[in-house]
Structure formats: C-alpha cells, structure tokens
Length: 433
Ligand code: NAD
Image 1 (tube, rainbow, N blue to C red):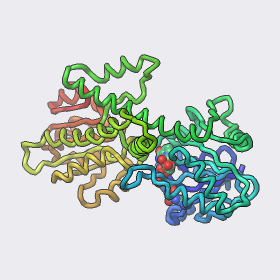
Image 2 (image 1 turned 135 degrees about the vertical axis):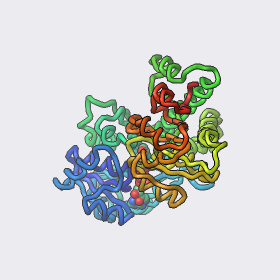
Image 3 (image 1 turned 30 degrees about the vertical axis):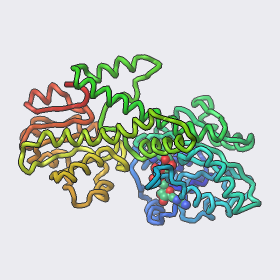
Image 4 (image 1 turned 135 degrees about the horizontal axis):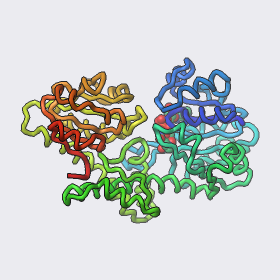
C-alpha cells in the first residue's frame, strides 16, 4: 500500500520504517527541512534500538523516502497518517491542537481517490470530527474517511513494539476505512489482537491507558515512601503485588517519577478534558501533583547528602527520561538536575545517548563527562537518575578512588546495596531502608 506519514519524529519515523519493512511504499513528510535533509543524507535524526539497520535497508531498497512536500507525499496515498506533536498548551495544559489542525488543512488539497486519514498522534476525544470537518471544508470534493489509530509504542523499544504490538486499536466509523486498515495490518493477523471501536472510544483509550499507567507509577512511588518509613522493602512488596494476575508486575518499579513526552502531557490533557466535561477525576489529579512533588523530593535527597559540604560537586548518571532513548522531553532527570542547578549545585553529568539533547537544555549550566567515571571525579555525591543498564556495572573500587565523598542516591535502585555498603558507601535507594 502507499502510505504517507506526516511528522517524522519519535512516532512517525519508526512507524514509517516499520511499514516499509512490511513491504509498503512509505513517504515520510516533515516541515523541518533540516530533519528531512539529514534523513536524505542517510543519517538518523533520533536514536532507537534497531532502527538504523532497518532504516538503511529500506532506503536502499527504495521503500521509504523523505520529503518536506505535502503534495509529493499525500498524492496517490491510500493512507495518510498524522503523527505530529500534541504538546501541552502553555496555559491550560490541554493538548495543543495547532499542529494537527495545520496538518489536516495542509493535506486536504492533495487527497486523490479514496483515502483513509489516520490520526496516530494522541488527540483529545472528538478530534476525528474536527479533522474531518477541516478537510471537507478545504477540499469539498475529497473522498476520505478519518480514523483514530492510537500509537502505543514505547520509546527505546519502538522497533520491537512496532513488530510485536500488544494490541492494535482502530477507531473507525466506516466499514470501508476499517477494511483499509485491516489490509495494512494484515501481517499481524492472528498474532495481535485488533480491536475495532468507535472513533471517540479509540481516542479515549489512548488517554485512559496512559493515565492509568501514570497512576500505577505514582502509587508504587507512594508505597516506596511508606516502605522507607516502616522497614518494608518495596521490591518485595511490588513482587508480592505483581504476582496477583489482576495487578500484574509491570509499572511497579519505584523511581524519581514518571516522565517523557507522553505521560506528563497526557495526564494533564486528560484532566483538562475531564474538567471540561464536568467529570471529577481525582486519581489523575493526585498523580499529576504527586509526580511534580516526587522530583522535588528526589532533588532534596541529593542535596541533603551534601548539606554539610562546602561547594559540593554532584555527579549525575542519566539524563534521558528512560533507558534506550536520547529523548529528554519531560525527563525526571532533567527536572531534578534543574532543581539542583537552581540551588547552585556544581554538576557533572553523563548519559550514554542523551548528551546532545541534554546539552541543548542545560548549555553551560552543567559540565558534561565522556563516561561515567569521568563524571565521578572529585564528586561528593553520585545521583543515578536514569535506568541505563550499564550503570549497574559501576566498579565501586574505581568509584571510591575517584570520589571525594562516598555517597550515592540511586533513584533507580540499580546498584547492589550490599556491594555499595561493603565499599563503605553511604547508599540511599528507593523504598527500602
Ligand atoms: P515529535 O515532536 O518527535 O515529532 C513530531 C514531528 O512532526 C516533528 O518532526 C515536526 O517537525 C513534525 N510536524 C509538525 N507539524 C507538521 C506539519 N504540519 N507537517 C509536517 N510535519 C509536521 O513527536 P512524537 O514524539 O513523534 O509524537 C507525535 C505524537 O504521537 C504525539 O501526539 C504524541 O503524544 C504521540 N505519541 C508519542 C509517543 C512517543 O513515545 N513519543 C508514543 C505514543 C504516542
């Protein structure tokens, strides 16, 4: 099939590469000409495990191309996917629809034949109706249907998740559109549950899922606080809870709060939609507030460790919002480091993939190390903020020789407590004494 994808970011690019690998003819469109030039020169614009190999293969075999031209991408496409950003509005925190509305208006003139316009971006309930109206207004002769096709991939696992989705949700109000999407996802038939629902239900499923996961994280973080006060161990508590099939073991890892480009903005957008519709969603509101406080609490933990040291130096390991990605958008690590910077801390940070993106945020407000041991040099405390598995291999012998004081705040519970203590480190993890 011929597929156009508008928006070549963390969703659009892996989705485009995945669809090309399945044999479709894909055109990725982005208005950012620098991004398109980079991709056309054979270089990726973001890091995702396994993406580079598939990208190069499909470019070479001519199944995927990149352009800034809406006309070039949309003309003759069977499916046009909208995968542009829906960031929080700076004032109300509702999902800002300006990119969606612009994309819908810009694509309208180039629709040819019957086309399915699929919204992959996370969008408020009722957006399908707006997109439909915008296209019909701009191009009254267009023959099209709008479907909701929410994206559930996890950054860092985008390629894995593209080929092994938990479920494919399709919100389509027309049989014809449903059949086009069925055809596109034929390779997943019999392997993945495909759920066909009303468009408004599909739009809501995405927010309901992300809000639920955010609440689950917030819950285990509060449980971790409880464990710290009572002598229970949150690992053991989570393990015991997770064995209950009604609860499940996932998203029960306590940490510095949820982050990334989705959970914070989607919980706020959901809360906004609830308020607009006169519905009290107290759990979501509690998770939003708790998550903001969580990051402050983590920054305080780090500062408390060095409160008696003059001009303390803080080593930070991890800046990305999670492992496997270079994405720092709404990263808890970035919020915590920002709080530390505001308190005047002297910080040297290292992240295996996110140094470039972090540098755009912090500039010269912090120092950057080439590896984790360089970050530790003369540090008074080490703060581990992202769950990169490499950090688990920290050599305590080397660390103790490099650091000025042997203090660790491990916000991801990555290190072995007994080993840290055996080297005399003052170690503080999450959710256990
Ligand atoms: P992104 O910011 O990485 O990419 C969006 C891209 O769209 C940018 O490159 C931008 O230049 C481009 N763009 C904006 N307007 C355009 C236009 N009119 N024409 C052409 N290009 C345009 O965003 P993302 O992280 O890929 O997220 C996209 C959507 O998918 C959001 O709604 C997000 O909530 C949702 N989503 C994201 C993830 C994730 O893990 N990042 C997961 C599921 C869903």
